Image (tube, rainbow, N blue to C red; front, side, top):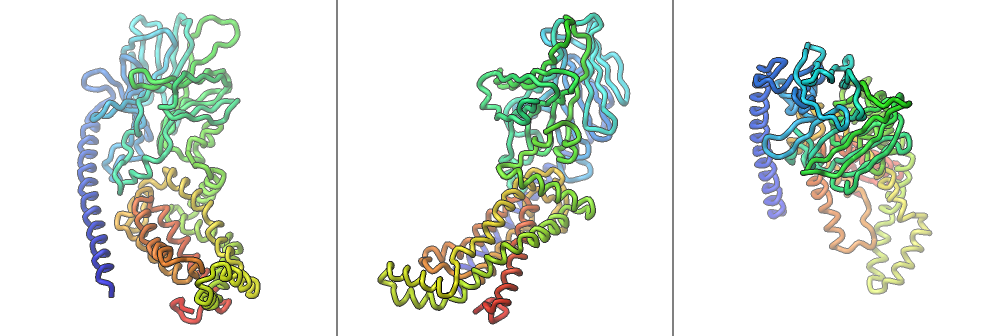
Length: 516
């Protein structure tokens, strides 16, 4: 028994326990703060006590509108809580931070025509603002049962400026996005953030805020513009009835501006009204597909998007029948392993052949340990004689890598997994709070290594590194989303079962523990 390994294991377990305890305390504090804010907001009516803001809400969204400027200064998604508790406030897309200079808001109107508004009238389904001179109005309405808002700007006498809609935002992560390690902070901070514009010339163009050095403009019929961030976002959606000049501008006093102006048609010189269509909601692929062309591209799937998107579609299809995301991931993984089995089987058979000739390779290594050239020559002869392909064992890994990367980006960006539960896990989008899945993955790797043949050219240092890989990967999975860990555990577990089955079938294993 190795006392040093036991001590090391105890230290790791104690560190994990302390880390879990600290994270739990932080989570409790966050939940208390959220409850207090929810109680405070629950006391508000349709107009704030100071008369500066008016509220508009439906079952999905709650908007906070500045009466004087007509800007949407805060939006909360009522069905997506900041914390995974019933009393939680909804996450914000627009809003500002009490602890920093962060701000994000929406404004519409007519260019070159600043207006001060007063509240004209409001109800449970609309808000109407009127300019001080009575010439202009701004009306807010929700489209039926939708995350979309219609904002109609009207001028009775007409204005010479163009209708516009703009998003104003400072740099930094989105509001209410978790930054704690056990709250998915490592993965959350890695998601793409930047301006995205879709036109009839370029379906999807993006740029990070700090890369916007000069104003960017692009004319298009239809299209959309948005700021891309994880899980939830706002997008200004164009109509095929108009031509829009989409733009993104460098920061002024730390604030970036992106949006569009509506180009006038015909020979008219004045603009009388325009209705803007704004989406403020979750990034659910099947929903975005129905709202605007190419809007689903706002879900950043990384380099392997051509694999990720079909995987998300199929995973969502499975979930329509099972109605459980964790179980859907398990079923999806099993089906994927079944499809890839013909490829992986060839690799496992090749690895089994390598395992069979292992004793002969060791004999050659002992015989020609002082003659590398002769050893290589005899190894090649052995491979030819026994019909062994030393590279064939790479097939299982190579076949799975693209799907792992594709699934990594897919699961990292799927808002559907946020707060989805699985036994002891209350949120599949964050790391396993009890570290069960990372430990299981490490154990599966250990058993897999026992079955896999040691490369004939591996030196003692390489062998020690390989033995430490289960620990290294388990540590990585401590910060990976539980959904990805679940996929990896099922994927590796099935691979282990397939490998043992093929080894036994071809006479490679002679005992139930994997020994030869």
